Length: 245
Image (cartoon, rainbow, N blue to C red; front, side, top):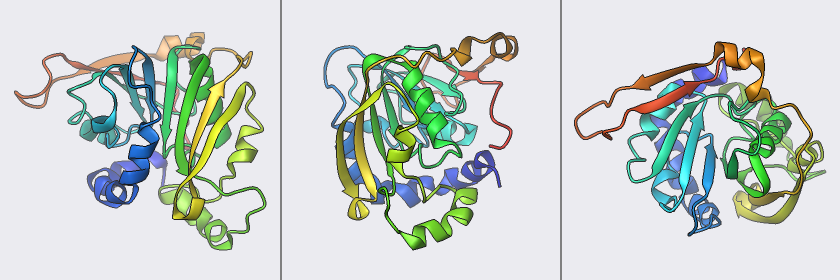
């Protein structure tokens, strides 16, 4: 089963599965965001939008998810925010380099097949001096966790990986430093990690490649009912979504 298929099927019950269990950790993570100023923040992996009611209204947001089913549910929660919706792949973000002041990564790095690529892409699109706010489940270096490792081959096909060692991932991404790392839930399996971008990675800007520009499509979703936001919600569909997803 692909991630796109899996999360399309999970969308109707996702809030019930994830919402209450992670509510406190989610609130603690979002409390790290600046409360004032005007920042442009990428919510990378918005899911059904459980973050949206807790986001400071002072900022401008771009919300990205791989599946339309998740975005359809999330957009019902974001009417109070300056918010743009984007359907795309976290492993190949359809944004220019240094486009955002900060990036929010809630429960996405341990879900995608290539965690290092996803973190590298998140680092690419944030400006130097910007921060990446991570909430996810990671093993510690050398941690046995035999059960989590044993179930990973099945779990990663359905919903998430259970074998990701964050320190190994970070070692392959240049230009990031750890500002803070705190346990959040489940005896420290879930962690709140704050990263700062210290330098550009000197990588090509994949979002501006000629192949991406040739295939890029924009479409407008009409409001679903009279109470929906007056402005149309624009979805920028990234044409280069990893086939394996």
